[in-house]
Length: 254
Ligand SMILES: Nc1ncnc2c1ncn2[C@@H]1O[C@H](COP(=O)(O)OP(=O)(O)O)[C@@H](O)[C@H]1O
Ligand SMILES: [Mg+2]
Image (tube, rainbow, N blue to C red; front, side, top):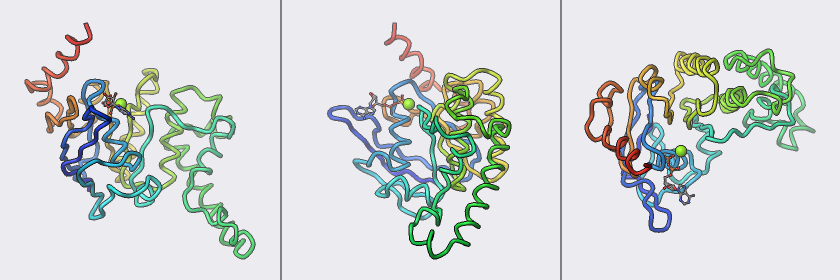
Protein backbone atom coordinates (compact mmCIF):
# COMPACT_ATOMS: atom_id res chain seq x y z
CA UNK A 1 0.00 0.00 0.00
CA UNK A 2 2.86 2.40 0.90
CA UNK A 3 6.14 1.84 -0.90
CA UNK A 4 9.30 3.84 -0.27
CA UNK A 5 12.21 3.32 -2.64
CA UNK A 6 15.73 4.60 -1.93
CA UNK A 7 14.56 7.81 -0.31
CA UNK A 8 17.21 10.27 0.86
CA UNK A 9 16.99 13.68 2.50
CA UNK A 10 19.85 15.91 3.62
CA UNK A 11 20.02 19.19 5.50
CA UNK A 12 23.27 20.92 4.62
CA UNK A 13 25.99 18.41 5.42
CA UNK A 14 23.72 16.13 7.45
CA UNK A 15 21.99 13.16 5.82
CA UNK A 16 18.81 12.87 7.94
CA UNK A 17 17.30 10.02 5.87
CA UNK A 18 19.83 7.89 4.05
CA UNK A 19 18.63 5.68 1.20
CA UNK A 20 15.59 4.19 2.95
CA UNK A 21 13.47 1.55 1.22
CA UNK A 22 10.50 -0.06 2.90
CA UNK A 23 6.94 -1.12 2.20
CA UNK A 24 3.74 -1.46 4.19
CA UNK A 25 1.29 -4.02 2.81
CA UNK A 26 -1.96 -3.89 4.75
CA UNK A 27 -0.15 -4.80 7.94
CA UNK A 28 -2.70 -3.10 10.16
CA UNK A 29 -0.51 -1.39 12.72
CA UNK A 30 3.14 -0.76 11.83
CA UNK A 31 5.67 0.94 14.12
CA UNK A 32 8.65 3.13 13.30
CA UNK A 33 11.16 3.39 16.10
CA UNK A 34 14.72 4.57 16.58
CA UNK A 35 16.79 6.87 18.80
CA UNK A 36 16.13 10.61 18.76
CA UNK A 37 17.44 12.27 15.62
CA UNK A 38 17.45 9.04 13.61
CA UNK A 39 15.27 10.57 10.88
CA UNK A 40 11.80 9.20 11.68
CA UNK A 41 9.92 12.51 11.58
CA UNK A 42 11.81 13.58 8.45
CA UNK A 43 10.67 10.36 6.76
CA UNK A 44 7.05 11.07 7.76
CA UNK A 45 7.42 14.64 6.42
CA UNK A 46 8.50 13.23 3.07
CA UNK A 47 5.77 10.59 2.90
CA UNK A 48 3.13 13.26 3.49
CA UNK A 49 4.64 15.87 1.17
CA UNK A 50 5.83 18.40 3.76
CA UNK A 51 9.45 17.85 2.70
CA UNK A 52 10.57 17.06 -0.82
CA UNK A 53 12.74 14.00 -1.23
CA UNK A 54 16.30 14.65 -2.48
CA UNK A 55 16.31 11.23 -4.15
CA UNK A 56 14.00 8.27 -4.34
CA UNK A 57 10.35 7.48 -4.97
CA UNK A 58 7.29 7.08 -2.76
CA UNK A 59 4.15 5.29 -3.93
CA UNK A 60 0.78 5.08 -2.22
CA UNK A 61 -1.14 2.26 -3.89
CA UNK A 62 -0.04 2.55 -7.50
CA UNK A 63 0.22 6.34 -7.36
CA UNK A 64 3.58 8.10 -7.27
CA UNK A 65 3.22 10.66 -4.46
CA UNK A 66 6.77 11.88 -3.86
CA UNK A 67 6.16 15.06 -5.85
CA UNK A 68 2.65 15.82 -4.61
CA UNK A 69 1.65 18.57 -2.17
CA UNK A 70 0.34 17.58 1.32
CA UNK A 71 -3.31 18.40 0.51
CA UNK A 72 -3.20 16.26 -2.62
CA UNK A 73 -1.72 13.39 -0.64
CA UNK A 74 -4.40 13.63 2.07
CA UNK A 75 -7.05 13.73 -0.65
CA UNK A 76 -6.02 10.26 -1.84
CA UNK A 77 -6.31 8.90 1.69
CA UNK A 78 -2.91 9.31 3.35
CA UNK A 79 -2.99 11.63 6.38
CA UNK A 80 -0.80 12.41 9.37
CA UNK A 81 -0.71 14.06 12.76
CA UNK A 82 2.16 16.15 14.06
CA UNK A 83 4.42 15.88 17.11
CA UNK A 84 2.97 19.26 18.14
CA UNK A 85 -0.84 19.34 18.11
CA UNK A 86 -2.53 21.69 15.69
CA UNK A 87 -6.09 22.05 16.98
CA UNK A 88 -7.86 25.41 16.69
CA UNK A 89 -8.13 26.53 20.35
CA UNK A 90 -10.93 29.08 19.89
CA UNK A 91 -13.28 26.73 18.08
CA UNK A 92 -15.39 24.10 19.83
CA UNK A 93 -14.33 20.48 19.66
CA UNK A 94 -17.13 19.77 17.17
CA UNK A 95 -16.26 22.80 15.02
CA UNK A 96 -12.64 21.65 14.96
CA UNK A 97 -13.86 18.52 13.20
CA UNK A 98 -16.25 20.37 10.89
CA UNK A 99 -13.52 22.78 9.86
CA UNK A 100 -11.36 19.80 8.92
CA UNK A 101 -13.94 18.31 6.52
CA UNK A 102 -12.34 18.27 3.07
CA UNK A 103 -13.83 19.55 -0.17
CA UNK A 104 -16.89 21.25 1.21
CA UNK A 105 -19.08 22.74 -1.49
CA UNK A 106 -19.77 25.63 0.88
CA UNK A 107 -16.17 26.71 0.59
CA UNK A 108 -16.56 27.24 -3.14
CA UNK A 109 -18.21 30.63 -3.39
CA UNK A 110 -20.30 29.98 -6.50
CA UNK A 111 -22.05 27.02 -4.95
CA UNK A 112 -23.22 29.11 -2.00
CA UNK A 113 -25.37 31.03 -4.46
CA UNK A 114 -26.27 28.44 -7.01
CA UNK A 115 -26.42 25.13 -5.18
CA UNK A 116 -27.62 25.73 -1.63
CA UNK A 117 -29.27 22.30 -1.43
CA UNK A 118 -25.94 20.60 -2.16
CA UNK A 119 -24.22 22.71 0.47
CA UNK A 120 -26.87 21.88 3.06
CA UNK A 121 -26.65 18.19 2.32
CA UNK A 122 -22.85 18.21 2.60
CA UNK A 123 -23.05 20.10 5.87
CA UNK A 124 -25.45 17.57 7.31
CA UNK A 125 -23.21 14.72 6.19
CA UNK A 126 -20.16 16.41 7.72
CA UNK A 127 -22.00 16.94 10.98
CA UNK A 128 -23.07 13.29 11.15
CA UNK A 129 -19.56 12.17 10.37
CA UNK A 130 -18.11 14.55 12.98
CA UNK A 131 -20.44 13.12 15.64
CA UNK A 132 -19.36 9.57 14.74
CA UNK A 133 -15.71 10.57 14.97
CA UNK A 134 -16.21 12.29 18.33
CA UNK A 135 -17.55 8.97 19.57
CA UNK A 136 -14.61 7.10 18.07
CA UNK A 137 -12.05 9.37 19.78
CA UNK A 138 -13.99 9.43 23.09
CA UNK A 139 -14.74 13.17 22.97
CA UNK A 140 -18.52 13.19 22.61
CA UNK A 141 -19.00 14.79 26.03
CA UNK A 142 -16.58 17.57 25.02
CA UNK A 143 -18.26 18.51 21.73
CA UNK A 144 -19.22 22.06 22.81
CA UNK A 145 -16.03 22.79 24.78
CA UNK A 146 -13.49 25.14 23.26
CA UNK A 147 -10.65 22.96 22.03
CA UNK A 148 -8.17 25.13 23.90
CA UNK A 149 -9.83 24.03 27.16
CA UNK A 150 -9.18 20.34 26.50
CA UNK A 151 -6.26 18.63 28.20
CA UNK A 152 -3.12 18.14 26.13
CA UNK A 153 -3.96 14.46 25.69
CA UNK A 154 -7.52 15.21 24.61
CA UNK A 155 -6.19 17.69 22.07
CA UNK A 156 -4.10 14.89 20.65
CA UNK A 157 -7.23 12.73 20.34
CA UNK A 158 -9.00 15.64 18.68
CA UNK A 159 -6.17 16.00 16.21
CA UNK A 160 -6.60 12.36 15.26
CA UNK A 161 -10.31 13.11 14.86
CA UNK A 162 -9.54 16.02 12.55
CA UNK A 163 -7.52 13.89 10.15
CA UNK A 164 -10.21 11.19 10.21
CA UNK A 165 -12.63 13.67 8.65
CA UNK A 166 -10.74 13.10 5.38
CA UNK A 167 -11.81 9.40 5.34
CA UNK A 168 -8.20 8.19 5.19
CA UNK A 169 -6.94 4.77 4.11
CA UNK A 170 -3.75 5.24 6.10
CA UNK A 171 -2.87 7.45 9.04
CA UNK A 172 0.63 8.37 10.18
CA UNK A 173 0.95 9.20 13.88
CA UNK A 174 4.10 10.94 15.14
CA UNK A 175 4.61 10.08 18.82
CA UNK A 176 0.91 10.06 19.71
CA UNK A 177 1.49 9.09 23.36
CA UNK A 178 4.25 11.62 24.11
CA UNK A 179 3.29 13.71 27.14
CA UNK A 180 -0.10 12.12 27.80
CA UNK A 181 -1.18 10.32 30.95
CA UNK A 182 -1.54 6.52 31.30
CA UNK A 183 -5.36 6.60 31.22
CA UNK A 184 -5.39 8.49 27.94
CA UNK A 185 -2.70 6.18 26.57
CA UNK A 186 -5.06 3.24 27.15
CA UNK A 187 -7.83 5.18 25.40
CA UNK A 188 -5.50 5.91 22.53
CA UNK A 189 -4.64 2.22 22.18
CA UNK A 190 -8.36 1.41 21.93
CA UNK A 191 -8.84 4.20 19.38
CA UNK A 192 -5.94 2.92 17.26
CA UNK A 193 -7.39 -0.61 17.38
CA UNK A 194 -10.78 0.81 16.42
CA UNK A 195 -9.23 2.44 13.37
CA UNK A 196 -7.61 -0.82 12.37
CA UNK A 197 -10.97 -2.59 12.68
CA UNK A 198 -12.37 -0.04 10.26
CA UNK A 199 -9.69 -1.02 7.76
CA UNK A 200 -7.50 2.04 8.27
CA UNK A 201 -3.77 1.32 8.14
CA UNK A 202 -1.73 2.82 10.96
CA UNK A 203 1.95 3.81 10.72
CA UNK A 204 3.23 5.20 13.99
CA UNK A 205 6.41 6.63 15.44
CA UNK A 206 6.49 5.66 19.09
CA UNK A 207 9.03 5.69 21.92
CA UNK A 208 6.98 3.63 24.35
CA UNK A 209 8.44 0.17 23.67
CA UNK A 210 5.97 -1.93 25.67
CA UNK A 211 3.21 -0.19 23.72
CA UNK A 212 4.94 -0.86 20.40
CA UNK A 213 5.32 -4.51 21.33
CA UNK A 214 1.67 -4.66 22.36
CA UNK A 215 0.02 -3.14 19.31
CA UNK A 216 2.37 -3.31 16.30
CA UNK A 217 2.28 -6.31 14.00
CA UNK A 218 5.46 -5.14 12.37
CA UNK A 219 8.15 -2.57 13.09
CA UNK A 220 10.91 -0.74 11.29
CA UNK A 221 13.92 0.55 13.20
CA UNK A 222 15.98 3.52 12.05
CA UNK A 223 19.37 4.69 13.29
CA UNK A 224 21.32 7.67 11.94
CA UNK A 225 19.08 7.95 8.89
CA UNK A 226 19.33 4.28 7.96
CA UNK A 227 16.93 1.37 8.22
CA UNK A 228 18.57 -1.19 10.50
CA UNK A 229 15.72 -3.62 11.14
CA UNK A 230 12.33 -4.70 9.87
CA UNK A 231 10.29 -7.48 11.39
CA UNK A 232 8.18 -8.34 14.40
CA UNK A 233 8.74 -6.47 17.70
CA UNK A 234 9.88 -9.52 19.70
CA UNK A 235 12.68 -10.13 17.18
CA UNK A 236 13.77 -6.50 17.32
CA UNK A 237 14.42 -6.78 21.04
CA UNK A 238 16.96 -9.55 20.35
CA UNK A 239 18.56 -7.91 17.30
CA UNK A 240 22.21 -6.93 17.84
CA UNK A 241 22.05 -3.81 15.65
CA UNK A 242 18.89 -2.56 17.35
CA UNK A 243 20.35 -3.11 20.82
CA UNK A 244 23.53 -1.32 19.81
CA UNK A 245 21.62 1.63 18.35
CA UNK A 246 19.85 2.22 21.65
CA UNK A 247 22.86 1.55 23.90
CA UNK A 248 25.04 3.68 21.65
CA UNK A 249 22.71 6.58 22.14
CA UNK A 250 22.96 6.27 25.92
CA UNK A 251 26.75 6.22 25.66
CA UNK A 252 26.73 9.39 23.60
CA UNK A 253 24.30 11.11 25.93
CA UNK A 254 26.29 10.41 29.07
N1 LIG B 1 14.26 21.19 8.96
C1 LIG B 1 15.46 20.72 9.36
N2 LIG B 1 16.60 21.42 9.15
C2 LIG B 1 17.79 20.94 9.54
N3 LIG B 1 17.97 19.75 10.15
C3 LIG B 1 16.88 19.02 10.40
C4 LIG B 1 15.56 19.45 10.03
N4 LIG B 1 14.67 18.49 10.38
C5 LIG B 1 15.38 17.52 10.97
N5 LIG B 1 16.70 17.83 10.98
C6 LIG B 1 17.78 16.97 11.50
O1 LIG B 1 17.64 15.71 10.91
C7 LIG B 1 17.91 14.67 11.84
C8 LIG B 1 16.72 13.77 11.96
O2 LIG B 1 15.67 14.48 12.62
P1 LIG B 1 14.23 13.88 12.84
O3 LIG B 1 13.72 13.35 11.55
O4 LIG B 1 13.41 14.93 13.50
O5 LIG B 1 14.54 12.67 13.83
P2 LIG B 1 13.57 11.82 14.77
O6 LIG B 1 12.15 12.16 14.43
O7 LIG B 1 13.94 10.40 14.50
O8 LIG B 1 13.91 12.21 16.18
C9 LIG B 1 18.29 15.36 13.16
O9 LIG B 1 19.69 15.44 13.21
C10 LIG B 1 17.67 16.73 13.00
O10 LIG B 1 18.38 17.68 13.74
MG1 LIG C 1 10.60 12.98 15.62
